[in-house]
Each structure stands twice: as structure tokens, then as C-alpha cells.
Amino acid sequence: MRFHKSESAFFVFMALIFGAGVLILYAYGILYAVPRGMDAADRVKDIADVTTLLFGTGVLLATAIFFGIFLIYPLIRTQAREEYKLREMTETLSARSETLAQAALTDGLTGMQNRRYFDDALREYLMEFRRIEKPIGLMILDLDHFKQVNDTHGHDVGDEVLRAVAGCLRDMTRYHDVVARLGGEEFAVVAPNMTEEQLFKLAERIRKAVAALVVVAGNVRLRVTTSIGLAVWDGKETGEDFYRRADKQLYQAKRQGRNRVCA
Figure 1 (spheres, rainbow, N blue to C red):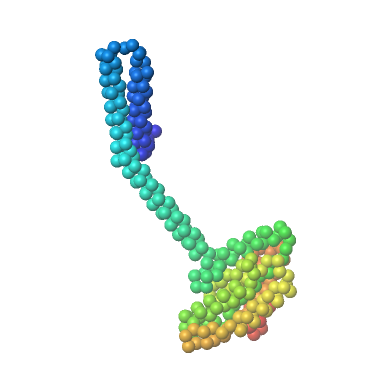
Figure 2 (figure 1 turned 180 degrees about the vertical axis):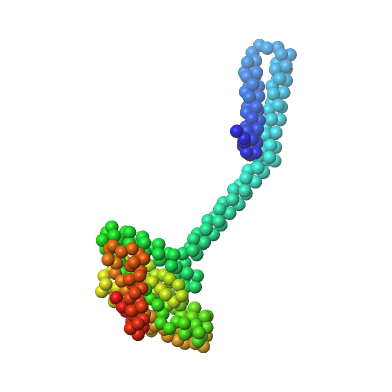
């Protein structure tokens, strides 16, 4: 078994203290054992022995103090600094890991959850709500004629539109709803414990709120609309089938003239 430098130094320090203690006890034993009627010559000899022992004790204690100040303490300080640096590095790496994990599930443009998070959350909701037999609503939103916004005003303005719509969706939904940007100008909302009627009313409020948005980017002021497809989970279908059914309703809304909700 190998000891750390500071541990070895501590053992040496304790050995010195222990040796000094043994010498002090030995000197005390000599003084205690001196009989009262001893002649002066023998008494001087015992006193000389005790003096020698006390001197040796002083040397050991002085060595221990020197050893502690100039070897043990620097080792402890060095180890403490190394542990502090290691802890600081660990915290930095942990924070960076959390940031990377969050970035992997977040849309960089809007700050919303991304498609990967949406797929995982939808799968988990279906598993849980199958057990408790409660409804789950799903809406898929697509901004109308968004390509014209990019072509006419540029992608910077298009990005502002996406951020504005994302903010609107966050404001209009509940804290436990999953709101995600699936890609491009397409968004999704998973609304647990909602009937078809409740989901339709929520989608209508969202559609009207998006249509009422005025996006300002520099000298540009514009409005956008969105088409929304809805589906309420039947309790059996997979996440892919559930999504596909809502997506079909979205395309139905597009075919019927856009800026509308289809369920």
C-alpha cells in the first residue's frame, strides 16, 4: 500500500511527537523514582540524565514543528489547491455537459424544444396516458406562404417571424404542454388531457393570436397566418401514426385555403 506524501509526512510528524512524549514520561519516571535520602552525587547524576532527556525532547519537538511548518503544511496547501482545481474543473465540465444536453434538445433559433425532444416527449406521454386512460391532443402548425417572407424580405426577417410565433405559442399554452419547432416553419403542440372540442378551441385561439401578430424587423412590418391540423389520440396508435393523422389534417387545412383549423 502506497501512501500520499502528506500521509507519510503526517506519520513522521506523529512519530516525532510520540518520541518526545516517551522521553518526557521516561524523565518523569526518573524524577519520581529518586529516593529522598539519596546523596548529592547521585542526585546530580539523575538531574543530568533528566536534563539530557528534556533536551532530547526539545530537539524532537523542534524537529516536529519545523517538519510541520516547512513540509506538512505546504503539502496540505498543495493538495487543497489541487482538490479545488479538480472540483472547479468538474463543475465546469458538468455545466458544459448540461449545456450540451440542453442544446441537443433545444431549437437554437427560437429557444423552443426541437424535433428530438418532441418525439421523446410524445412517446412518454402516450405510454403514461395509455395507463391512466386519458386523452392527448396534438396540433401541427405550419406558417402560410412562409417561403414568400424569406424570398421577399430575407431570412433575417423570416427568423424574426419564427421567433415571434414561438413566443406566441409559449404564451398561449400551458406549462405541461410540449411546444416544439419541428423544423422550418412547422411547429407542434402536445396538449395532454384535452378532448377534441377543447383542443379545437385552443387551436382557434392560437390561430387568431398568430394572425394578430405584427412582426417588426427594421423597416419591415408584416403579418403571417398559420394552418393547423388536429388529432386526439385513440389510445392505441403509435406516436408515428398519431403524428401522421394530425399532419394529414394540416394538409387538409392548406388545401381548404389556409389560415384555418382542421380536425
